[in-house]
Length: 467
Image 1 (tube, rainbow, N blue to C red):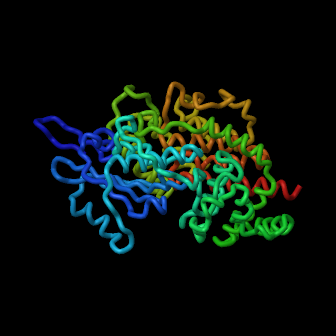
Image 2 (cartoon, rainbow, N blue to C red; image 1 turned 30 degrees about the horizontal axis):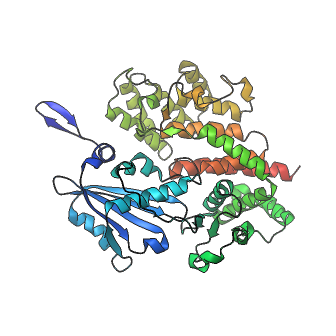
């Protein structure tokens, strides 16, 4: 977005960049919170700041003081006061809100954030990238207010309405690892925290098995094995319901087979190696295959690149037409050939392998093509030690860099997924599945990686059970 000003082009900040760079210069208009936040410890909080034109920029935070910290956050930028007020009118009669001062709002958000981080639970990715800048810096200039978190200091994970079994398992595995067995409470969505008396709470009372959400818990291992293998014989014909049953059976069987100590060991190794910093700029020059300053790439070109990248999975024909135009305008950007490879792969083209090898040799320092190439080598069964620059690290693919883009993160994790799951070590496969939930992935990217992991897990499990 731009406007003319005496012959010059003045580029306007995007709403996200405005919040990052300038939100703290705006005066606080008001802070609003749900009236029952202290009892429920589930907080719907908003912080609004006022522009000189009278409009409002407001950030909303959903804070779980019991365990999960900042579960969600979003913003409205430079809206009228009436539009801002409509957000609260929607809840009229359903939820009561009250104003609070900024210091209390600040302390609520940071108390939830820090309590969750104590157990390795990260805030919503939009908080890290954008909405934290609506808050003042967390310094001694802000009065410290004691905000109670958890229950007697113990994290309480309450299963949310949208939490599927995989989410529950990841969260419980995280708490088991960080809080320790018996040092947290798990409640299903139909259970009430008030049922537990603070004075009578005993850590030993909460046995993991009592709150196991495994619907196959009453089946013997052999019964689950027989049902699982039976479904696998018709795996290509399964409807959605039976596909879900197959995945749940796989998880249930793996839970009985894994060595917890080995799982946790691999989990820690994966987390240390793969937990990388993600750039706030989704389309750094690196993504298109050049180093910053090597040549000028206008935002319009970057937007076209991203549009084609997102179009390929859904409409390859249209993506192909647009890629031809992009190739003419991009003047040899390596990113063009990355998009070509994705398109060829989507189309199942016989030229994919030939082009991949050609472009990998032509652009050996371009991470996206290199990651696709070396992932292919792993899938084909090549020993990792025979692949260039083994052993692999962040520096192997991104030398001299401190951050990578979300697109690069997906291919970095995909490579390591196939690397980690070589062979039939279910402990590694399950540990990788667990650690995926720790990274700042979009819902779509997480689902893709988790689905790949599940396919590998099912194949490994079939091999193990039919030996």
